[in-house]
Image (tube, rainbow, N blue to C red; front, top):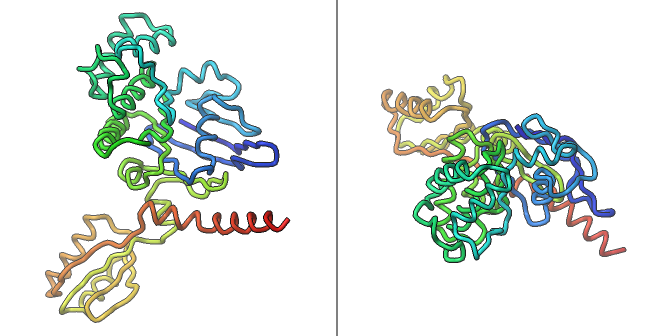
Length: 320
């Protein structure tokens, strides 16, 4: 769906994006994360045709986004980090305005607008002026507007910025619904816990570099290794270790007096069967839990070396 090859963006001697190569398949909900100044928004603006790169290639749904910009804008729905709404328009008029920009006829606009406003839970607000809507409603309206021409790719830059907890939950549910409908979505955010609940793939940027990308579980395993499972028990330690050693997806990492620590590549069902087998063979299991990295710890781990390099560069510049 979205293919970025060797993308660069320079501002004089400063490189905002450095040799970024990324592939996002059809139907993915992709989370773009990184600190301020990492290059996320620059990359998004290039993808959406709002900025030209210094070098590189962007392909969207088989179309060269850099050489065929007029055509590619029909393939993209873009929700920027500011609302971009017109307060003196009613919700219905706002949707009509954007539909007309894509040369849609009035009947088509009305039909699609009704469907989209229902999707974003704003059907009862059609005759309300935009400036009377809450911040969360305005953001959902922006998503509806971005979808009116049925784009192949939906791009959202910090859509949850400034939203209250309820509005963030509503936005998450909306994006999950769109993913379930087969939309390809790219979302940048600083709220890592929410991305981990929505996204099936991620890209982490730091200092203009893409430092990690791929399916979340693959990136996690690449950084942290296999998942860790800790089983606590009162009796039957030797039997538990023997059962674990017999499992092809398990490695016993350590054995304590009241716990054993395993690394594994098991599914949830396989974990349940393993623990069940131990109990059936008279191991007195008192509990078990998975110990694995989350998106926050992943982000800190993969950006740690970049931060150290940046600190060294800054120190060198300050000594010049």
